[in-house]
Length: 237
Image (tube, rainbow, N blue to C red):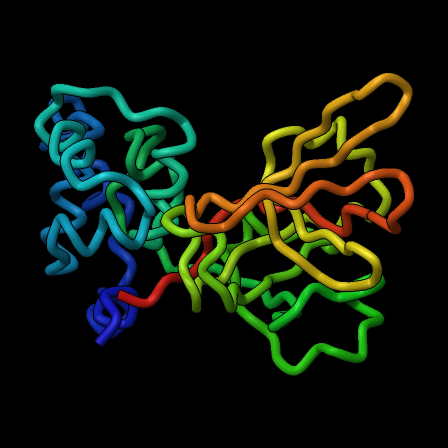
């Protein structure tokens, strides 16, 4: 059973404000970010390797965060919070009642198996919806299921990522980002960069998999960025 499902099965009733203040008094001043992550992980009966895989972080780095030897970046905190199914404030210890159990609030977005050619809400390719945490939801976002291994190890086949729909954005403005692109009408998910060779602009599409050769796209070909990958929202363990 997925550990998010295990968490939902054991979701306790909402604590009273008195109990919440008592919990803050007991551990709030002393429990650091790493200790909060470790406590939540153990409460969910999740191993360190499971959480690291779910959040797409290195297990050794996660271990050092839990011990308090390393400081987690904002992006890492966000990824761990999503993986644990809690608001970021729970890990940071911000505000009264931050340790009280909180129900997951989700909203649904279109889920695609290939890059939609057009606005996600209007696409005929849509087959299903996928729930994302409420703070990640935007009306111009959609979810995309990765089907190939060209972005390994960053993204694996079966991963579901959140994508900002940004049709026609200039590739210079998304340098280094993983983007959903159309090349001569064919979809691809690659990391985008741009080089100038005289007056000619060359768009280079790279996979993170070293076995995937980069693709060069010059001005003679039809190319557009359809969306920019935001974060990983689901991974099978």
